[in-house]
Length: 445
Image (tube, rainbow, N blue to C red):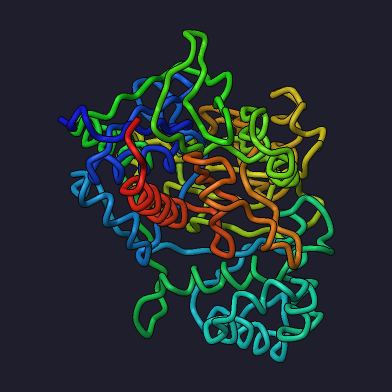
Protein backbone atom coordinates (compact mmCIF):
# COMPACT_ATOMS: atom_id res chain seq x y z
CA UNK A 1 0.00 0.00 0.00
CA UNK A 2 1.11 3.58 -0.64
CA UNK A 3 2.26 5.93 2.10
CA UNK A 4 -0.66 8.17 3.20
CA UNK A 5 1.77 11.08 3.48
CA UNK A 6 2.72 11.05 -0.22
CA UNK A 7 1.19 13.33 -2.81
CA UNK A 8 -2.31 12.38 -3.99
CA UNK A 9 -3.04 12.60 -7.74
CA UNK A 10 -6.41 12.47 -9.51
CA UNK A 11 -6.57 11.03 -13.03
CA UNK A 12 -9.64 11.79 -15.14
CA UNK A 13 -10.36 9.09 -17.72
CA UNK A 14 -9.86 5.34 -17.48
CA UNK A 15 -8.73 4.35 -20.95
CA UNK A 16 -5.33 2.86 -21.81
CA UNK A 17 -3.74 6.27 -21.16
CA UNK A 18 -5.31 6.73 -17.74
CA UNK A 19 -4.61 3.24 -16.44
CA UNK A 20 -1.00 3.38 -17.67
CA UNK A 21 -0.53 6.74 -15.94
CA UNK A 22 -1.97 5.31 -12.73
CA UNK A 23 0.42 2.37 -12.93
CA UNK A 24 3.54 4.50 -13.44
CA UNK A 25 2.57 7.02 -10.75
CA UNK A 26 1.81 4.28 -8.25
CA UNK A 27 5.15 2.66 -9.05
CA UNK A 28 6.71 6.05 -8.34
CA UNK A 29 5.16 6.11 -4.87
CA UNK A 30 2.17 8.39 -5.50
CA UNK A 31 -1.31 7.92 -4.13
CA UNK A 32 -3.68 7.82 -7.12
CA UNK A 33 -7.44 8.03 -7.56
CA UNK A 34 -8.86 7.55 -11.06
CA UNK A 35 -12.30 8.69 -12.23
CA UNK A 36 -14.03 7.00 -15.17
CA UNK A 37 -17.53 7.95 -16.26
CA UNK A 38 -18.24 4.54 -17.84
CA UNK A 39 -18.97 1.32 -15.99
CA UNK A 40 -15.73 -0.33 -17.17
CA UNK A 41 -12.16 0.74 -17.79
CA UNK A 42 -10.71 0.82 -21.28
CA UNK A 43 -12.38 3.65 -23.20
CA UNK A 44 -11.98 2.86 -26.91
CA UNK A 45 -10.14 -0.31 -25.87
CA UNK A 46 -13.08 -1.62 -23.84
CA UNK A 47 -14.99 -4.77 -24.73
CA UNK A 48 -18.54 -5.83 -25.41
CA UNK A 49 -19.95 -8.90 -23.62
CA UNK A 50 -21.10 -11.43 -26.21
CA UNK A 51 -22.62 -14.74 -25.06
CA UNK A 52 -20.13 -15.07 -22.23
CA UNK A 53 -17.20 -13.81 -24.29
CA UNK A 54 -15.30 -10.54 -24.24
CA UNK A 55 -15.00 -9.12 -27.77
CA UNK A 56 -13.22 -5.87 -28.65
CA UNK A 57 -15.60 -3.03 -29.49
CA UNK A 58 -13.03 -1.79 -32.00
CA UNK A 59 -10.04 -3.57 -33.52
CA UNK A 60 -6.55 -2.87 -32.16
CA UNK A 61 -3.06 -3.93 -33.17
CA UNK A 62 0.12 -4.67 -31.26
CA UNK A 63 3.13 -4.84 -33.55
CA UNK A 64 6.14 -7.02 -32.87
CA UNK A 65 8.14 -3.77 -32.61
CA UNK A 66 5.84 -2.19 -29.98
CA UNK A 67 8.23 -2.46 -27.04
CA UNK A 68 6.40 -0.08 -24.68
CA UNK A 69 3.28 -2.23 -24.93
CA UNK A 70 5.20 -5.46 -24.58
CA UNK A 71 7.07 -4.17 -21.52
CA UNK A 72 3.78 -3.26 -19.82
CA UNK A 73 2.32 -6.63 -20.74
CA UNK A 74 5.28 -8.35 -19.11
CA UNK A 75 5.28 -6.14 -16.00
CA UNK A 76 1.53 -6.54 -15.54
CA UNK A 77 1.72 -10.32 -15.57
CA UNK A 78 -0.25 -10.72 -18.81
CA UNK A 79 2.66 -12.04 -20.91
CA UNK A 80 1.22 -15.56 -20.86
CA UNK A 81 -1.74 -14.27 -22.89
CA UNK A 82 0.43 -12.68 -25.63
CA UNK A 83 0.75 -14.47 -28.97
CA UNK A 84 2.80 -13.61 -32.10
CA UNK A 85 1.31 -14.31 -35.51
CA UNK A 86 2.33 -13.80 -39.12
CA UNK A 87 -0.30 -11.64 -40.80
CA UNK A 88 -1.14 -10.73 -44.37
CA UNK A 89 -2.77 -7.78 -46.07
CA UNK A 90 -4.34 -7.35 -49.44
CA UNK A 91 -6.09 -4.92 -51.77
CA UNK A 92 -9.57 -5.01 -53.23
CA UNK A 93 -9.51 -3.40 -56.67
CA UNK A 94 -12.03 -3.59 -59.51
CA UNK A 95 -13.81 -6.60 -58.03
CA UNK A 96 -10.69 -8.65 -57.30
CA UNK A 97 -8.52 -9.38 -54.25
CA UNK A 98 -4.74 -9.11 -54.47
CA UNK A 99 -2.04 -9.99 -51.92
CA UNK A 100 0.15 -7.07 -50.87
CA UNK A 101 2.79 -8.41 -48.49
CA UNK A 102 6.18 -9.27 -49.98
CA UNK A 103 8.43 -7.54 -52.52
CA UNK A 104 7.25 -10.17 -55.00
CA UNK A 105 3.63 -9.11 -54.38
CA UNK A 106 4.66 -5.49 -55.03
CA UNK A 107 6.24 -6.41 -58.35
CA UNK A 108 3.22 -8.46 -59.43
CA UNK A 109 0.48 -6.04 -58.25
CA UNK A 110 -1.79 -5.95 -61.35
CA UNK A 111 -3.53 -2.60 -60.71
CA UNK A 112 -0.15 -0.89 -61.31
CA UNK A 113 2.18 -1.18 -64.28
CA UNK A 114 5.80 -2.24 -63.82
CA UNK A 115 7.15 1.30 -63.54
CA UNK A 116 4.44 2.26 -61.01
CA UNK A 117 5.22 -0.80 -58.89
CA UNK A 118 8.87 0.22 -58.83
CA UNK A 119 7.95 3.73 -57.68
CA UNK A 120 5.66 2.36 -54.98
CA UNK A 121 8.54 0.26 -53.66
CA UNK A 122 10.77 3.34 -53.81
CA UNK A 123 8.22 5.25 -51.70
CA UNK A 124 8.27 2.56 -49.00
CA UNK A 125 12.08 2.48 -48.95
CA UNK A 126 12.37 6.28 -48.94
CA UNK A 127 10.14 6.52 -45.87
CA UNK A 128 12.50 4.28 -43.90
CA UNK A 129 15.46 6.62 -44.51
CA UNK A 130 13.64 9.90 -43.91
CA UNK A 131 14.02 10.77 -40.22
CA UNK A 132 12.98 14.43 -40.18
CA UNK A 133 9.46 14.60 -38.74
CA UNK A 134 9.45 18.41 -38.81
CA UNK A 135 10.15 18.32 -42.56
CA UNK A 136 7.31 15.85 -43.16
CA UNK A 137 4.96 18.04 -41.14
CA UNK A 138 5.44 20.93 -43.59
CA UNK A 139 4.75 18.92 -46.79
CA UNK A 140 1.17 18.22 -47.97
CA UNK A 141 0.66 14.47 -48.08
CA UNK A 142 -0.51 14.49 -51.71
CA UNK A 143 2.54 16.48 -52.84
CA UNK A 144 4.92 14.06 -51.12
CA UNK A 145 3.18 10.93 -52.40
CA UNK A 146 3.01 12.18 -55.98
CA UNK A 147 6.61 13.44 -55.97
CA UNK A 148 8.07 10.14 -54.78
CA UNK A 149 5.60 7.56 -56.05
CA UNK A 150 4.04 9.26 -59.05
CA UNK A 151 0.49 10.27 -59.87
CA UNK A 152 -0.54 6.81 -61.06
CA UNK A 153 0.40 5.20 -57.75
CA UNK A 154 -1.25 8.05 -55.88
CA UNK A 155 -4.57 7.72 -57.73
CA UNK A 156 -4.71 3.93 -57.56
CA UNK A 157 -3.30 3.22 -54.09
CA UNK A 158 -3.04 6.30 -51.86
CA UNK A 159 -5.99 8.53 -52.82
CA UNK A 160 -8.67 5.94 -51.95
CA UNK A 161 -6.97 5.18 -48.63
CA UNK A 162 -6.72 8.87 -47.74
CA UNK A 163 -10.35 9.47 -48.68
CA UNK A 164 -11.36 6.58 -46.48
CA UNK A 165 -9.14 7.66 -43.61
CA UNK A 166 -10.12 11.34 -43.56
CA UNK A 167 -13.67 11.13 -44.97
CA UNK A 168 -12.86 13.71 -47.66
CA UNK A 169 -10.36 14.80 -50.25
CA UNK A 170 -7.25 15.76 -48.29
CA UNK A 171 -5.84 19.23 -48.91
CA UNK A 172 -4.44 20.20 -45.50
CA UNK A 173 -3.01 16.91 -44.25
CA UNK A 174 0.77 16.66 -43.73
CA UNK A 175 2.91 13.89 -45.21
CA UNK A 176 3.53 12.73 -41.63
CA UNK A 177 0.39 10.58 -41.66
CA UNK A 178 1.57 8.24 -44.43
CA UNK A 179 5.29 8.55 -43.59
CA UNK A 180 4.67 7.46 -39.98
CA UNK A 181 2.44 4.60 -41.08
CA UNK A 182 4.97 3.25 -43.58
CA UNK A 183 7.74 3.36 -40.99
CA UNK A 184 5.60 1.68 -38.34
CA UNK A 185 4.37 -1.12 -40.58
CA UNK A 186 7.82 -1.89 -42.00
CA UNK A 187 9.10 -2.24 -38.43
CA UNK A 188 7.09 -5.48 -38.18
CA UNK A 189 8.76 -7.11 -41.20
CA UNK A 190 11.09 -9.96 -40.32
CA UNK A 191 13.73 -11.65 -42.42
CA UNK A 192 14.35 -11.78 -46.15
CA UNK A 193 10.83 -13.08 -46.72
CA UNK A 194 9.52 -9.76 -45.32
CA UNK A 195 6.86 -11.51 -43.22
CA UNK A 196 4.68 -9.16 -41.18
CA UNK A 197 4.55 -10.15 -37.51
CA UNK A 198 1.88 -8.87 -35.13
CA UNK A 199 0.81 -9.79 -31.62
CA UNK A 200 -2.49 -10.15 -29.85
CA UNK A 201 -3.65 -10.61 -26.30
CA UNK A 202 -6.27 -13.19 -25.45
CA UNK A 203 -9.18 -11.01 -24.36
CA UNK A 204 -7.90 -8.01 -26.35
CA UNK A 205 -6.34 -4.83 -25.00
CA UNK A 206 -8.64 -5.22 -22.01
CA UNK A 207 -6.47 -8.07 -20.76
CA UNK A 208 -3.62 -5.58 -20.36
CA UNK A 209 -5.90 -2.97 -18.78
CA UNK A 210 -7.29 -5.56 -16.36
CA UNK A 211 -3.82 -6.79 -15.39
CA UNK A 212 -2.43 -3.26 -14.98
CA UNK A 213 -5.46 -2.29 -12.88
CA UNK A 214 -4.78 -5.26 -10.60
CA UNK A 215 -1.16 -4.14 -10.13
CA UNK A 216 -2.44 -0.60 -9.47
CA UNK A 217 -4.89 -1.76 -6.80
CA UNK A 218 -2.11 -3.71 -5.10
CA UNK A 219 -0.25 -0.37 -4.90
CA UNK A 220 -3.30 1.40 -3.41
CA UNK A 221 -4.80 3.02 -6.52
CA UNK A 222 -8.54 3.69 -6.21
CA UNK A 223 -10.69 3.29 -9.35
CA UNK A 224 -14.03 5.13 -9.31
CA UNK A 225 -16.22 3.76 -12.13
CA UNK A 226 -19.52 5.32 -13.14
CA UNK A 227 -18.10 8.58 -11.78
CA UNK A 228 -18.39 11.46 -14.27
CA UNK A 229 -16.52 14.65 -13.43
CA UNK A 230 -18.58 17.85 -13.36
CA UNK A 231 -15.60 20.19 -13.08
CA UNK A 232 -11.87 20.26 -12.54
CA UNK A 233 -11.78 23.05 -9.99
CA UNK A 234 -9.26 25.83 -10.59
CA UNK A 235 -8.73 28.70 -8.16
CA UNK A 236 -5.98 31.33 -8.27
CA UNK A 237 -4.39 29.59 -11.30
CA UNK A 238 -4.04 26.26 -9.47
CA UNK A 239 -5.94 22.97 -9.75
CA UNK A 240 -7.54 22.18 -6.39
CA UNK A 241 -9.26 18.92 -7.31
CA UNK A 242 -12.36 17.57 -9.03
CA UNK A 243 -16.05 18.16 -8.46
CA UNK A 244 -18.50 15.28 -8.78
CA UNK A 245 -22.13 14.90 -7.72
CA UNK A 246 -20.70 14.25 -4.25
CA UNK A 247 -18.96 17.61 -4.07
CA UNK A 248 -15.34 18.78 -4.26
CA UNK A 249 -12.55 16.23 -3.82
CA UNK A 250 -9.19 17.87 -3.20
CA UNK A 251 -5.93 16.55 -4.69
CA UNK A 252 -2.34 17.68 -4.94
CA UNK A 253 -2.57 17.55 -8.76
CA UNK A 254 -4.99 16.51 -11.50
CA UNK A 255 -4.18 14.81 -14.82
CA UNK A 256 -6.79 14.75 -17.59
CA UNK A 257 -6.67 12.13 -20.34
CA UNK A 258 -9.90 13.35 -21.94
CA UNK A 259 -10.20 14.58 -25.50
CA UNK A 260 -9.22 18.25 -25.72
CA UNK A 261 -12.68 19.82 -26.29
CA UNK A 262 -14.17 17.78 -23.42
CA UNK A 263 -11.28 18.75 -21.16
CA UNK A 264 -11.87 22.42 -22.08
CA UNK A 265 -15.50 22.19 -20.96
CA UNK A 266 -14.43 20.95 -17.51
CA UNK A 267 -11.99 23.76 -16.67
CA UNK A 268 -13.99 27.03 -16.65
CA UNK A 269 -11.43 28.47 -14.23
CA UNK A 270 -8.50 28.01 -16.65
CA UNK A 271 -7.21 30.86 -18.86
CA UNK A 272 -9.46 31.54 -21.83
CA UNK A 273 -6.50 31.37 -24.23
CA UNK A 274 -5.72 27.82 -23.12
CA UNK A 275 -9.33 26.72 -23.44
CA UNK A 276 -9.44 28.24 -26.94
CA UNK A 277 -6.37 26.18 -27.85
CA UNK A 278 -8.08 23.02 -26.61
CA UNK A 279 -11.28 23.84 -28.49
CA UNK A 280 -9.31 24.12 -31.76
CA UNK A 281 -8.29 20.46 -31.63
CA UNK A 282 -10.47 18.44 -34.03
CA UNK A 283 -11.06 14.70 -34.11
CA UNK A 284 -12.37 12.20 -36.60
CA UNK A 285 -15.13 9.92 -35.38
CA UNK A 286 -15.63 6.32 -36.42
CA UNK A 287 -18.53 4.11 -37.42
CA UNK A 288 -17.34 0.52 -37.04
CA UNK A 289 -19.78 -2.33 -37.61
CA UNK A 290 -18.64 -5.78 -36.52
CA UNK A 291 -19.70 -8.70 -38.70
CA UNK A 292 -19.57 -12.00 -36.78
CA UNK A 293 -19.29 -14.97 -39.12
CA UNK A 294 -19.23 -18.73 -38.66
CA UNK A 295 -16.38 -19.18 -41.14
CA UNK A 296 -13.24 -17.53 -42.49
CA UNK A 297 -13.82 -14.83 -45.13
CA UNK A 298 -10.36 -14.01 -46.56
CA UNK A 299 -6.70 -14.84 -45.77
CA UNK A 300 -6.01 -11.17 -44.92
CA UNK A 301 -5.89 -9.36 -41.59
CA UNK A 302 -6.48 -6.10 -43.47
CA UNK A 303 -8.02 -5.85 -46.93
CA UNK A 304 -7.57 -2.30 -48.23
CA UNK A 305 -10.19 -0.96 -50.62
CA UNK A 306 -9.45 1.24 -53.65
CA UNK A 307 -13.10 1.53 -54.76
CA UNK A 308 -14.21 4.97 -53.50
CA UNK A 309 -17.91 4.04 -53.84
CA UNK A 310 -17.57 1.63 -50.90
CA UNK A 311 -18.19 3.51 -47.65
CA UNK A 312 -16.02 1.48 -45.27
CA UNK A 313 -12.26 1.96 -45.08
CA UNK A 314 -11.21 -1.68 -45.11
CA UNK A 315 -12.21 -5.22 -44.28
CA UNK A 316 -10.37 -6.03 -41.04
CA UNK A 317 -10.64 -9.73 -40.28
CA UNK A 318 -9.09 -9.84 -36.82
CA UNK A 319 -9.42 -13.61 -36.54
CA UNK A 320 -6.65 -13.86 -39.14
CA UNK A 321 -4.51 -12.50 -36.30
CA UNK A 322 -6.42 -13.80 -33.26
CA UNK A 323 -6.92 -17.55 -33.05
CA UNK A 324 -10.72 -18.02 -33.34
CA UNK A 325 -10.62 -20.42 -30.36
CA UNK A 326 -9.98 -17.35 -28.18
CA UNK A 327 -13.27 -15.78 -29.32
CA UNK A 328 -15.56 -18.77 -29.08
CA UNK A 329 -14.79 -20.06 -32.58
CA UNK A 330 -16.33 -17.00 -34.19
CA UNK A 331 -14.74 -15.12 -37.11
CA UNK A 332 -14.66 -11.36 -36.54
CA UNK A 333 -14.76 -8.86 -39.41
CA UNK A 334 -14.70 -5.11 -38.70
CA UNK A 335 -15.88 -2.71 -41.41
CA UNK A 336 -14.71 0.75 -40.21
CA UNK A 337 -15.46 4.17 -41.61
CA UNK A 338 -13.71 7.26 -40.22
CA UNK A 339 -16.01 10.27 -40.13
CA UNK A 340 -15.31 13.98 -40.38
CA UNK A 341 -16.70 16.18 -37.59
CA UNK A 342 -20.42 16.70 -38.13
CA UNK A 343 -20.88 13.72 -40.48
CA UNK A 344 -24.50 12.64 -40.61
CA UNK A 345 -23.43 8.98 -40.68
CA UNK A 346 -22.79 9.17 -36.95
CA UNK A 347 -26.54 9.70 -36.58
CA UNK A 348 -27.65 6.89 -38.87
CA UNK A 349 -29.75 4.24 -37.09
CA UNK A 350 -28.18 0.80 -36.87
CA UNK A 351 -30.55 -0.75 -39.41
CA UNK A 352 -29.67 1.88 -42.02
CA UNK A 353 -25.96 1.26 -41.46
CA UNK A 354 -26.51 -2.49 -41.74
CA UNK A 355 -28.43 -2.23 -45.01
CA UNK A 356 -25.89 0.14 -46.58
CA UNK A 357 -22.80 -1.76 -45.42
CA UNK A 358 -24.09 -5.22 -46.32
CA UNK A 359 -25.13 -4.02 -49.77
CA UNK A 360 -21.53 -3.08 -50.57
CA UNK A 361 -20.14 -6.08 -48.73
CA UNK A 362 -22.15 -8.48 -50.90
CA UNK A 363 -20.94 -6.66 -54.00
CA UNK A 364 -17.35 -7.23 -52.86
CA UNK A 365 -18.03 -10.88 -51.97
CA UNK A 366 -20.71 -12.13 -54.39
CA UNK A 367 -20.53 -15.67 -52.98
CA UNK A 368 -21.34 -14.45 -49.47
CA UNK A 369 -24.31 -16.28 -47.95
CA UNK A 370 -26.40 -14.65 -45.20
CA UNK A 371 -26.30 -18.01 -43.39
CA UNK A 372 -22.61 -17.34 -42.70
CA UNK A 373 -23.54 -14.30 -40.59
CA UNK A 374 -24.12 -14.84 -36.89
CA UNK A 375 -24.48 -11.16 -35.99
CA UNK A 376 -24.02 -7.58 -37.20
CA UNK A 377 -23.21 -5.12 -34.39
CA UNK A 378 -22.76 -1.38 -34.97
CA UNK A 379 -20.22 0.47 -32.81
CA UNK A 380 -19.61 4.23 -32.87
CA UNK A 381 -17.31 6.77 -31.27
CA UNK A 382 -17.23 10.53 -31.77
CA UNK A 383 -13.63 11.30 -30.74
CA UNK A 384 -11.15 8.78 -32.17
CA UNK A 385 -8.40 10.19 -34.37
CA UNK A 386 -6.95 13.68 -33.76
CA UNK A 387 -6.53 15.83 -36.87
CA UNK A 388 -3.29 17.78 -37.23
CA UNK A 389 -3.27 20.26 -40.15
CA UNK A 390 0.00 21.14 -41.88
CA UNK A 391 2.43 23.19 -39.84
CA UNK A 392 0.38 23.31 -36.62
CA UNK A 393 2.63 21.35 -34.27
CA UNK A 394 2.96 24.57 -32.28
CA UNK A 395 -0.73 24.22 -31.41
CA UNK A 396 -0.33 20.85 -29.68
CA UNK A 397 -1.23 21.42 -26.01
CA UNK A 398 1.56 20.91 -23.48
CA UNK A 399 1.56 18.24 -20.76
CA UNK A 400 2.14 20.91 -18.11
CA UNK A 401 -0.80 23.27 -18.61
CA UNK A 402 -0.86 27.00 -17.71
CA UNK A 403 -2.72 26.00 -14.55
CA UNK A 404 -0.40 24.97 -11.73
CA UNK A 405 -0.59 21.23 -10.95
CA UNK A 406 -2.97 20.56 -13.82
CA UNK A 407 -1.63 18.19 -16.47
CA UNK A 408 -2.85 16.89 -19.80
CA UNK A 409 -2.05 13.55 -21.42
CA UNK A 410 -4.17 12.75 -24.47
CA UNK A 411 -3.87 11.42 -28.02
CA UNK A 412 -3.44 14.86 -29.61
CA UNK A 413 -0.01 14.88 -28.00
CA UNK A 414 1.38 11.68 -29.59
CA UNK A 415 1.96 13.43 -32.95
CA UNK A 416 3.99 12.86 -35.14
CA UNK A 417 3.56 9.25 -34.03
CA UNK A 418 0.36 7.48 -35.01
CA UNK A 419 -2.47 7.16 -32.52
CA UNK A 420 -2.17 3.60 -31.21
CA UNK A 421 -1.53 1.66 -28.03
CA UNK A 422 2.24 1.94 -28.38
CA UNK A 423 2.29 5.73 -28.72
CA UNK A 424 -0.33 6.15 -25.98
CA UNK A 425 1.52 4.04 -23.42
CA UNK A 426 4.82 5.71 -24.32
CA UNK A 427 3.29 9.18 -23.80
CA UNK A 428 1.73 8.09 -20.49
CA UNK A 429 5.16 7.06 -19.26
CA UNK A 430 6.64 10.44 -20.21
CA UNK A 431 3.85 12.44 -18.56
CA UNK A 432 4.04 10.34 -15.40
CA UNK A 433 7.78 10.99 -15.25
CA UNK A 434 7.14 14.73 -15.61
CA UNK A 435 4.60 14.72 -12.77
CA UNK A 436 6.90 12.71 -10.49
CA UNK A 437 9.75 15.13 -11.22
CA UNK A 438 7.57 18.19 -10.55
CA UNK A 439 6.13 16.67 -7.36
CA UNK A 440 9.55 16.68 -5.75
CA UNK A 441 9.34 20.48 -5.66
CA UNK A 442 5.75 20.86 -4.47
CA UNK A 443 5.37 22.46 -1.09
CA UNK A 444 3.26 20.70 1.50
CA UNK A 445 0.20 22.61 2.65
